Each structure stands twice: as structure tokens, then as C-alpha cells.
Length: 394
Image 1 (tube, helix red, strand yellow):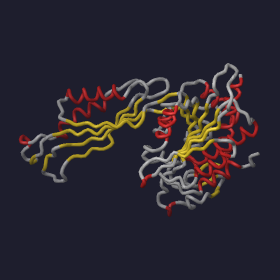
Image 2 (image 1 turned 30 degrees about the horizontal axis):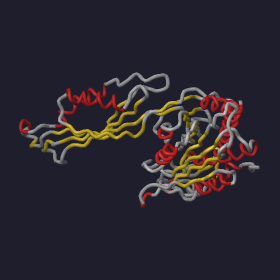
Image 3 (image 1 turned 90 degrees about the vertical axis):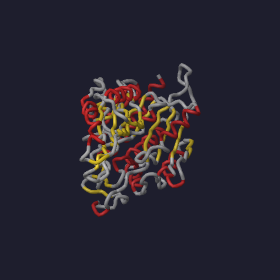
Image 4 (image 1 turned 60 degrees about the horizontal axis):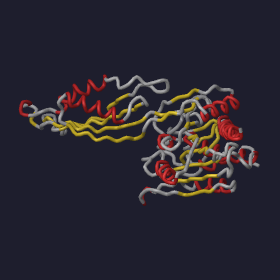
């Protein structure tokens, strides 16, 4: 049987490992050893170039049974990342970032909130669930990567492609991102906006600034179009998402000299878009606007992730019930914030939510998790397992 405070102890073991992207520092081996003891088949899926080698883990325990209707058992996946962001200036930390420390009811260390506490809670929740339910009616799986905080090119997306090619069916997924605000469970993410970036190069003719009639200033040319883009209403959003937004992030033009009209200006911009728009519709509308303004331009697009949404249903309801029973809270559904690996998982899994501890200190100096938030998180994960198992038996 799991020891009391097992979640805290495992969290501390994981925090002590300096796993800055793309390093895993043995976190996945530590977790694999515990899962293998429970009957999980653990598979390492490394990816990436030699100088940026990414560790991925796919671990699954099959139910080896069908439900009463004869259908195959459904699969719940816990997903997360073992990598963390860099520490920043060590002198600004009150304790060493990879030496877990306790102060004022808090556990300090890089990754405490994002997201090693969630990983430990996954593992101990599974251990406790299987101790009470050695023959569950659901498959249980774990997907981990060491490339979530980095480029995210060789992490979860690679595993998802592998699983899809194999015909692996996933039904439910819980990503351990830190989604809560004040207390564990007060907010979950049941979707995320898509992200699409563009690099727009508006071309002109370089010349002497005293002879503008002999040049063509691309900055001046671009300004009316940019002003109109700022005012465009791309969509109205919906019940779950705010309207799509368009923002300029960088603008580069000029030679550095004060008497030269530049030959081009480069504008970096980004769409954060909801399910009311598609990459194709946004690209078409933006290009039509640029063409209407008569600009001579090049435009390169990068789609960082598509939006996804899991409306209330089997998984959301199970998570809501688990949070209510454990904490008394009525959780808030949200799609705010940046992207996560949920965008990859949603391409192969129909129901994806994110649930983790409070996120107030993620990526900050002196990152911490309140000790009072650790056990409730583990218990919520375990309660979700229990509910899905009970539903599968019905």
C-alpha cells in the first residue's frame, strides 16, 4: 500500500533532478520503475538531434477485459512533462532551485507548480487506485515528455503521431498543467485557443530621406493596412472562447541611419484564435486586406497549434464531481492562457482537459506549491479514475 505523504516524497525526488529542457535527468526512469511494478508496459521514445535529444515515455496498463456490451475498455491518459524552464539568476533564489525546501507551508523548487507535483500526483493516484481496484474496467496510461517548455517539436507531438500510426485509441486525457488560481481544483482548462504566427515583409524602394519622391517607404505603405488590421473583428467568439485576437509582436525596418528610407519592413504578428475561425479563413481575410491596400509583400505562416474544446460530458463531469467531492469547490471551466501539449493530444483524443495546482509562481524565481494543495490534487486524480471505472462497469 502507498505510504502516507507518498505524493510529497515523490514530488521532492523529482524536484531534486535538474531537468531543464530538453533534459529529463532520470525523472522518467524513476516514474517508469514505479509503474512497471504495477504491471505497466513502459516504452521510451527518444527523438530529436544529438544536441537536443528529447526523452519521451509511453506507459500503459491494459484492462484485459470488455464491458458488458462487449466493447473494448476505454483508455484514460495522464499526460505531462518532466522538463522545466531555466532557473534564472541563482542568487535571487532563497534556496537552491533543485534542492526542494520547505518554508511557511510551501514546497519550493523549480518545477514545483509546473509540473512535477502533478506528475507525482498522477503516479500515487494510480498506485492507490490499483491497490483498491486491481482489475479495473479501464485502461490507464501515462505520456511524458522532456520537450514541452522548449520547441515542442520532438515531444508529445511525436508520441501522438506514433500512437496514431499504431491505431492506438485514446478516450480521455488529463494534462497536469497548473490550471488552478487560489486552490487546487478551482479552475480547469477544457480547451485552448489556437495559435498562428505570421512574418510579413512589406517591400519598398530604399533611398535618401531628403528625396522621398525617388524612393518608396514601406513603413508608410504598411501603416494604413496595419491600422485596419488592428480594428478587424475576426469573429465573435462563443460560449467557451473569447473572440479571436490579432497582435503585432515585433516590427523591424531601417538601416540604422537617420537619413535612409528603408527598402523593407518586417512585421511579426500572431493570431490567438477560437473554434469560430480556422487558419485558412484567417489567412484568406488577412491577405485580401493586404492586397486591397496594394502592398508588395511576402508572408510566411507558422501554425503553432489548433484550438480544441471538450464540452461538458463524461470526462468534464467526472472531473467536476471529483473536485466537488474532494474540495467542496464548484470548478470553473476556462480556455484562457497560452498553449499546452493538449493541442497535440486533442488531435487523437476526443476529450482532453487540463488540471493541476495553482499557477501563481510558474516560471518565476522561488517557484513553489503549497503543501496543502498536494494531497487534494492526488485525490482528485484518483477519484476520476474511480468514477470512470464505475461508469465502465455499468
